[in-house]
Amino acid sequence: MTRRHNGEGSIYPYRSGFAAHVWITTPEGRRQRKVVYGKTREQVHQKWLALHELARRGPVAPRSPTLADFMARWLREVVVPNLAPTTSTNYDLFTRLYVVPDLGRKRLDKLSVRDVQTWLNELRVRCQCCAQGKDAARAEPRCCAASKCCHQVGSEWTVHQAWTVLRSALSAAMRDELVTRNVAGLVRVPVPRTKKRTIWSVPEARLFLESARRDDDPLYAGYVLMLILGLRRGELLGLGWDDIDLASGEAHIAWQLQRIKGELRRRPTKTLSSEAPLPLPDICARALDLRKVTEARSRLAAGEAWMGSGLVLTTRYGTPIDPRNFQRFFQARAAKAEVPVIPVHATRRTCASLLVALDVHPRVAMTILRHSKIAVTMDIYSQVSSTSTKEALKRLGNQFGEEVL
Image 1 (cartoon, rainbow, N blue to C red):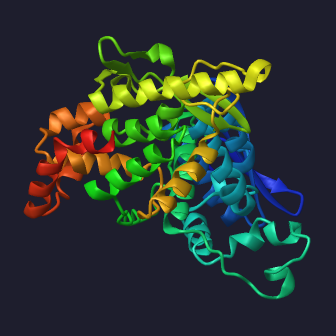
Image 2: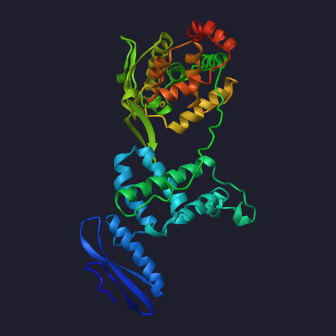
Image 3: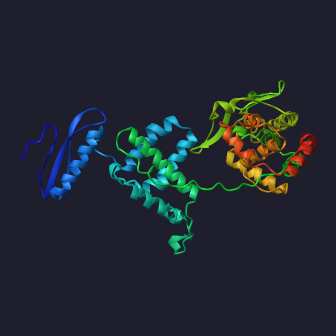
């Protein structure tokens, strides 16, 4: 038999089967032996050939971690230092609840396309109430523990997001040269359809603001800024008095308030385009003047308990408003005004619809709404309302502020 070349490795009997080793170069640049095992010589020979091919292509990891171990390190060393806290928290949630329970024990180099496809198929039909132990934690089980499954399956968006997190992690594994291909990226996952959201018409927006103004709602100024300037919830709650210049009629949207891991944090906005100064229409300036009066009354009533945060919208004690509480206040006000109860974020689309109907140029609308890409703005402009609605909005546009105040 011809001698093998130096560094080519060999196949030899080992315990109850065979083993083979190949000299590899690790991602750290070190040369060392990597061993494969099998019950028959043919099995080991195939593994030996595959390992040779990997070694020929580039560095090979001597030991492959489990997917759970790798994703824990990926979250700690890559995601948390480089992504926004809310994004990293979201990645951690999907990793912990959806990826690791099913695939975490798989070795990174053994994870296959079939494994990923099977996992996605199961996510679409599995009751997450039972899978995540929600029912077992209840004082009185009412789902699987009571033999009455509620079939709380993940939505298509949940499945898509879980797959996105796994694909991102495996892309990082490829960059670390731990795997040669991204098996999650080879699985076709359709992008879920976006549900059509309800938005307010101009009369409904006016009824909402009139209701808040009539009841002297302390959050009235915030509602005005949301509908007129299209502020996001976090941007609105993070807006400080030092970001507003009433003399020049401008507002600088540079901060956002978010709840991250149980703690309220005020942090910079995501993009530089969000920090562009916005002109304050008269209706916004008057609403902010009213807010100053309301804040002065609250400070006087709170006395020593007042904790000034410097924010425009605060609780009666001057502390930041929790975003979830603001959502509740907003929806309660909508119900009281007898208009459709919509999510807070839907007010941005209401603002965009006003701009569309008033024939505001897309580039101007993009600046007002602080979209990072014109394509986002044009997607809204492609859903323009009818001509009659446009004409009605034009007639209402000039009187919108005057009728509210």
